[in-house]
Length: 218
Image 1 (cartoon, rainbow, N blue to C red):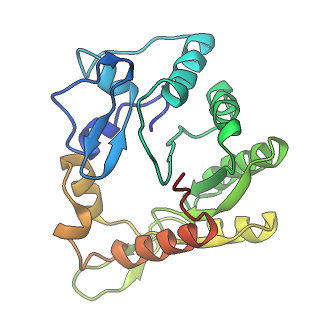
Image 2: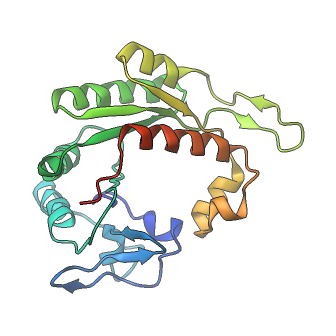
Image 3: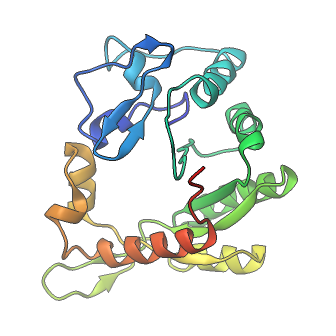
């Protein structure tokens, strides 16, 4: 589920060209075994700007949680924009009855990003949200010819932040044109790019998250 702030989910799962419609419960998009809902699915025009104040956004987030016909889920993954806004509070409040909850916090290596994410970790602590771990994205560029990793930005910010906060560091994901391309084109990254430099990192991170948050089948 993507909260009210973004519409990029449409393209990343090849879900453009159709909309969710209101039924007894909001109808969600289905891509293979994954159910999807995003504010982008509700718009007639994908380029339309959604100009809503906080209360209306918060009400939509609650509807996404309680009114969507999700069916039986193993996990509900919520993609939120960076920050500690009312949207984040509304998301936590809406999901709290369905505990346990966990936050996967993503940063990039730069000091500015790490500073923002430090505040997000404080938000998690104050709201009683368990931090499953920190992931460092855009962590160097692996040359496709020689496999040498070049740190385009600074390095180690995510791991240092996790150590200072006393939470697990789950791994680093390198910059990868194939990963970016698959997201923009809605392609199956695992199937189409199994030798990508980002694949081992993503697989390892997923395994660590699953070990901390086993699926709830009921």
